Image 1 (cartoon, rainbow, N blue to C red):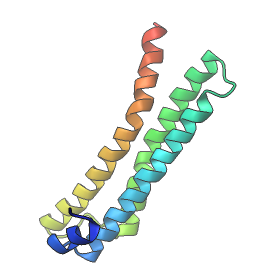
Image 2 (image 1 turned 180 degrees about the vertical axis):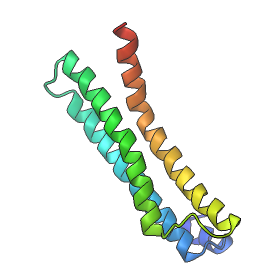
Image 3 (image 1 turned 90 degrees about the vertical axis):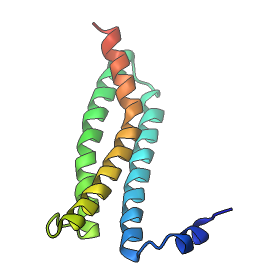
Image 4 (image 1 turned 120 degrees about the horizontal axis):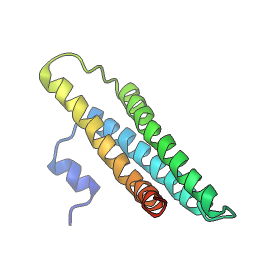
Length: 121
């Protein structure tokens, strides 16, 4: 069985990449927590129209938060998006990975929003 220690021994990942991955995971976990809290809150004391409004407002807010998360990870990781092609591609790859994970978390909210739109005309 390969655990995290064996993984790191098998695959040499330098410390800076681990820090970047840590920043990405922190953002994804925070995003997931916010989304879960919203899901719980949405079903407490709101009528149908208010829930529709909440879902669309939350979706817009969380979509903006993707950009903010990209900025935070870029800053914490020291990304410049300048230099040789390999460095730029590496930095862009980390941000693309972050973005894909955040969009996956937001997928449930978007699905809920689409359900509201299809049922309202």
